[in-house]
Image 1 (cartoon, one colour):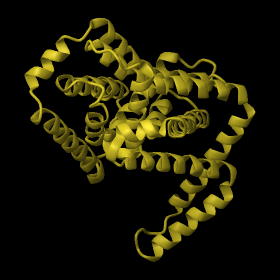
Image 2 (cartoon, helix red, strand yellow):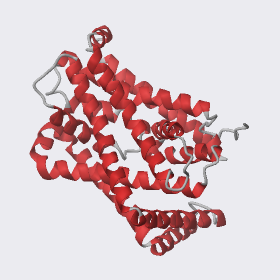
Image 3 (tube, helix red, strand yellow):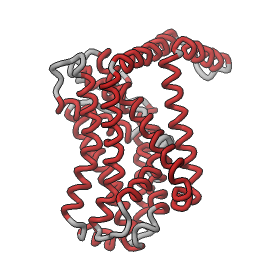
Image 4 (spheres, helix red, strand yellow):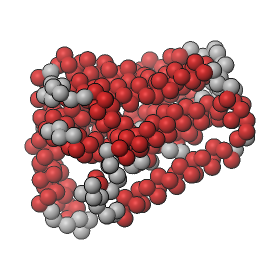
Length: 344
């Protein structure tokens, strides 16, 4: 397969990702004894480490299961293993692009290579994406409603990031719903924004862009019809999404127990990890690198001992992000999908 020549923006994206990763590693290891971290990791209970690995893989595979479950409504012969692959590809490209913008385009490209009709692929991915964000927002509001004092105590100065995360995720859900319910109005709004940008010379007129706006609105309206026509199936998918989210939050508790610590129950650790995830999810940093680690060190300081805090963070982030990123990279390589092929 011939890839398009790399664009400057794609090269800068990759360089930015590598720079953030290098700075993150430096910030972590320059303030902590590397030999002590390695020693702590080696003492991890193998059973809990295995549970943590399973939780990480389950998180990605659960998305693949939901894609498969929804695709089977129209594509009876679709393979579950293939859908797991789409999920890992999506995780990889989401992880290396700001605000996770590269995931769905890469998944659609992989599905096209497998000759899955774009209509079915788009519907399943959009339904999963809408439920994914909606469940996160509901979890975030639930924590605020039932545990606001606890959140404030543990998050401290990072509480502002939590409110920002709730706001941005909630705003995105509202916009998606507006696209579904008031598609014509939103398409008109996009056209007016485009006209204003053209007027102040931020962009040039483009018929292709107008078509893209129209297709975007049409896709979301079709997704709404799909959701309304399959309420029971969507409810089951939303439940799966909730368990998928919880699996990633539970991973931290497995690391906590694996390091020989006790005293904090799984609900507390999961709630804290959820608060970190919600706070950084929409920030324009690839993989939320840097801010995730800083928040983890601050929020989990009362949970882990001083000597084990950095070790727990390294293992938790290593499994929940870098480990899955590596699997996703191998999967994308198997499909011969590169960051440059998406620009074709």
